[in-house]
Length: 160
Image (cartoon, rainbow, N blue to C red; front, side, top):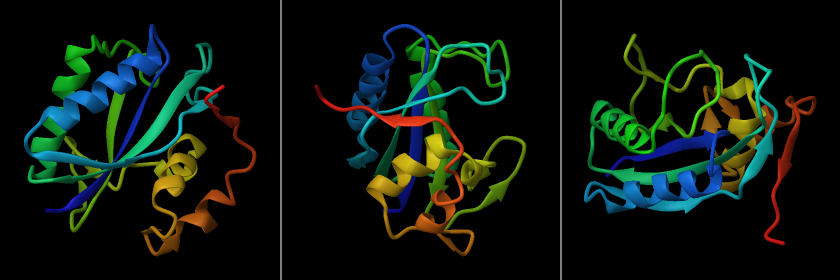
């Protein structure tokens, strides 16, 4: 089965619980196996900045779903968790993005993989590096990408 990497995040309501519920719903799908998840990271908003900080994680999965079927599953989970799309880059209960999908690239209106602007965003790259430290994205090693993102506000949460 192909591997894929997902980014999960949110900043409205019980965000950590929403992310955990999103992961549970992914695990409950017979066509998805969650292999690894990163730590939680608290991050400043990007784009529309007049909103609360986000919690973000990355997840590595194996899936029997096609990229478009996986997108439909992610969108369905977002709807179950009351995601509303009112403002681009605005507040949300949960966001589940397909960052990478093994052997697949697309730049269609429906699905862009690798995820656009992912290499410019610490809230994507740092959790992703935690679970996939040897990953190569667009010919670049992930540690080289993350080393250029030092100016972005991101804090790893601890369990205490």
